[in-house]
Image (cartoon, rainbow, N blue to C red; front, side, top):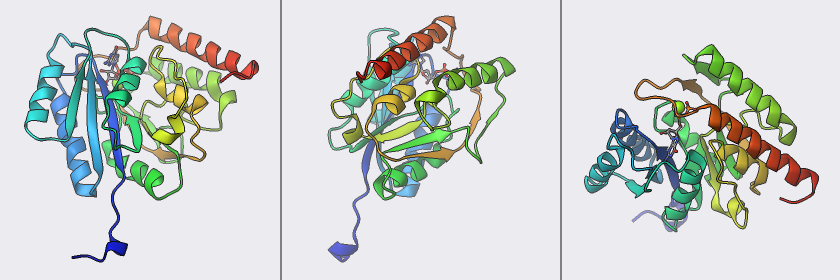
Length: 245
Ligand SMILES: Nc1nc2c(ncn2[C@@H]2O[C@H](COP(=O)(O)OP(=O)(O)O)[C@@H](O)[C@H]2O)c(=O)[nH]1
Ligand SMILES: [Mg+2]
């Protein structure tokens, strides 16, 4: 028996993957992330929140769950949005998880940095770890120029709110304690911005990674999501100015 004093229990966490029509890549993503959990000795669960994808994404995840992989699927009746999906996934996550997070299903977010993100919270004294494209070592590959410009403008608009560089990142892990009692706006695509602007995480660490454009499936970011982002930003600025959180 190992000495009890030298045994550390790995931090339990739940990472939410929202999906809408991701049948082309979800199995590979779940297997990849599960492999990283295993390799790094991480006690993570994957929560897929599927909005009744017509391409059958949800059924694939149910099969992987039945196979014994560390994944569970929350099925919602229809396309209800990315941010609300992540928030619902956090409520559905196992109660023992002390941290929750989000990751896209399309391999844009490099799963290899997950252990660093987990360690930042488990032992580094951070309340929030963000996968970041905009710190040294980070970057973007194969994204159309239009998307790069949209991302830059979106970040510039939110810059006065925080010193964090990748404000619109959808890849992060945050302690549940930091979210306690915090009301998150379920509008649109940018759940990361809600967390950065409102949660009580203390120190935040940006972990660099190179964002790569999706290979399978299509982007769901459209004009109405861009409008939602402006609406979300407006609400956050208004709350800041009026002193309401
Ligand atoms: N459950 C759910 N997931 C969504 C919705 N919209 C987008 N997603 C997922 O959110 C993630 C990011 O979306 P994506 O289309 O890749 O956006 P992009 O990377 O900004 O082009 C992907 O895993 C999508 O499947 C939605 O309405 N509901
Ligand atoms: Mg994507």
